[in-house]
Amino acid sequence: MNQPAHLSTAQNDSLAVPLQRWIRLICISSLSLQALFVLGDYLFNYRDIANSDNVRQLWNIAREESLPTWFSSMQAQAVGLTAWLIAFVQTNRISRLQRWGWLGVGLLFLWIGIDDYASVHEKLGNVLERMATAGESPVGGLTGLLLENPSYSWFTFIAPTFAVCALVALVFLWCAFRPLGLTRYLVDGFGILALSQGLDFIEGLDAMERAYDDLQQHFAIERRYAVSHSFRVFEEVLEMLGTLMIWLGLLCYLAIQCDGRRLILVNAKEPSS
Image (tube, rainbow, N blue to C red; front, side, top):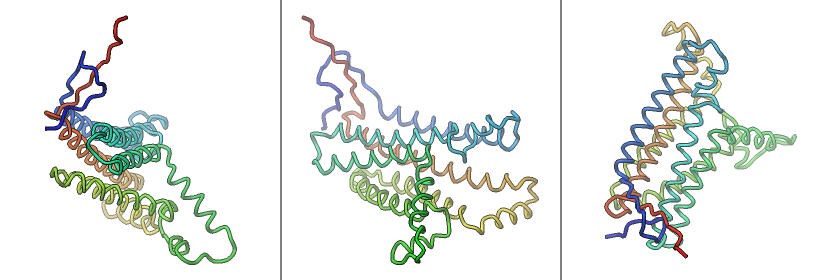
């Protein structure tokens, strides 16, 4: 059986962390916070109970620099840190290539967390598209094909790069998770994330403006904002849920790698002089 993971070689003042209990707590807490954010978005953006732009922006799930976006960013970065912890726990039991694989997965999700909060992909996508179309002559080849993208500009160059990185991470995690029967977390997590990005692509189409109007008229909805904003809220909630599923899969993998499904935290004391 594998030896317990240690954060120090000292044996005094050790604290056993029951990972399975923490996994359940993380799952319940994350889902509860997501429900709270949806409720807050409804109360402060639809019902406008505070009658304040600042409060509405604070609870707006579809807006950057809000509480829900901060939570989504932190959750993605927690996935990255968990992947790095797995690499540390298995340092002496896996190859150098596998360690780099776990570090790469961690780096990907840490960047996703930063990008989610700062909207780097949207801003960088606009810049790259302007640079690609700055010349007077038409652009051909692969770049010209990508520039035919009918949705948001970030889907032109940034989305393909993210897709390749996500595919590599998925293959790596699949190889690690398959012997342990954890691939369902990858199917659910990456599948939900792919669906959320698909909805983001659809949202950027010109035809969606007409679709919002049709839905408003068909269901006799008083405010058009209720239609368009609900679409964005659904997309963002899916993104948070998909990230959570991947995080739970990594935590389960970490628990299996630790003897007795525990992580032993050790406080190393300075030797007395």
